[in-house]
Structure formats: structure tokens, C-alpha cells
Length: 332
Image (cartoon, rainbow, N blue to C red):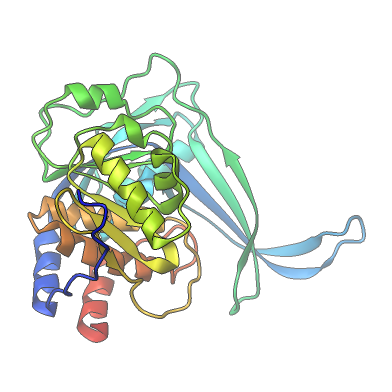
């Protein structure tokens, strides 16, 4: 790839093309090999400062749980009209029960999720403070996370067929890069890996955020040129088909071998409420686009819109096909 070619904004697809993509998402099967977890939220309204210590006292108003980690990608795939097939593990515990029940309620198959005795389901508890109608701020987070026990092997059934395989690797040992490399996967593989991106060569696409790309490339990213340099290095080392880098307020960067980099500005001008899980939303939309047979740049364009809709929502949340359709029809 020629390092001197600068990024350019691709020509936006027509509304009709994007709406056609959404129609194609309906019922599209996507395997999701993922580290699964539960995100728990505690929201309280401020009451006063404690007399016992210089801390804020919150009156608990609401408590809720949603699938976290790769489970958020599963939920987004379903919300966008796809049929995700999650492959992973949870503990034989209350949080594992919550996650499986949430999937069942949304008619997401749990057949390929193992219950592991003695293992505690990964959970992240976020405490939010704020008034009923105002901005709610995250004040503290508690993580309970441990890798799967040695010897536990979670591998997708080779007989399963889908339009794409999504790998959502948070570092808890559900995903085995060596097993993926040995397998002859008859579908595009899209990888989102927090710590082990260099261990996934030859896949159809990778979707790191800026921090993950910098770590994988061993290069700092402080500018557009830095992002392109890191992307080129990752593409060369992995021999991947595409790289879609999420860059927060700077949108996304799509890179492919033998093509100029394509930068897409962040969609829309809405207020950012919470970036939690935005990468999972982008991953889901991008993978559905590839699974449906659409060009990489079209899938990336739609994924950029999905990510922008997600950051307007509080906490770990999904973007539905109806929301995407409304945004395309009214904001493009």
C-alpha cells in the first residue's frame, strides 16, 4: 500500500442503498464467538453529602442488568434484524441466569452457551448519579472478571452455517486464536479483540478502536496520519481484508489493501451521552453488512451511523433497525 496516499471521504451511499441494506439484514444469521458478561447499573439521585465521610449520598432510584462484553454485540445484531448465534460460556450463577434469560426473552438461541460450574460470570457494575431528568454521571465502576478455567474449550460447531462469524474477544479466554487459524471457516470473519489483535491473521476484517490499534501497531496515534500509519501496519502484519478503526469524535477510518484510506466523519451532531458499548454497535452493523454481501465501504458507512446513534444513549444499549431507518430517512 502506498503510504503517501492520504485518506478521503467516500461518496455517501444513496438513501435507497442504505434502506436496501436494512431490509437485507432481516433474519441474517451471524455466529458470535464471544466473551460474555453482564453489565449492571445502579442509578441514584443525589441527596446530600454524608456526615460520616466526604462522599455523596444517593437515593437508589433504579437498578437494571443488560448483557455485556460480547453479549452487547449479540443484542445489537438482534436489534438490527439479524439472527445472532452466540457461542460462549457463563457461570452457573445468578448473573449467568440473567444473561441467558435476557437472550431467551429476545428469542436468541442459547444452545451453544456453556454453563461452567465454579466459574463466576464476568460482571461490571456501574454506579450512576444524577437527577430524574438531567444528565447522569458514572461515579464508580466495580469489575468482577476472571478468565475461563484452564482446560475449558469453547469452539463454534463446525456444522453451523451463517453469513459471517463475529469474534468478540475481551481477554477472558473464550476465544482461541489458534483454533480459529486452524479452522476452515466458510464465511467472513470479523474480529474485535481488546488485547490480542495481532493473533488473528488472515481474517476478513478487524474493528479496533484507536487505543487498540495503537497498541497492536506499537505506534502512538495523535493525528490522522498516525491513525493511517497504524492501520497500514496492522493490515500488513495480519494480511487482513479490511480494517475499520473507530475514532470517537473523529468518526471511523476504513482501510483496505491496495485502496486509499477512507475517513468518515462522525455522523450527526447530537449530544454524546455515553460511549459505553459503541464499538459493539459498530461491530454488529459492519458485520451484518458484510454478511449480507454488501461492499465494505457501504457496511462501514452504515456502521458509522449506528455508532453515532448509540453514543446518544445512556449505558450499554442497542440500536434498532427502526432507529437506523428513521435516521436514514430524516437525517441524510
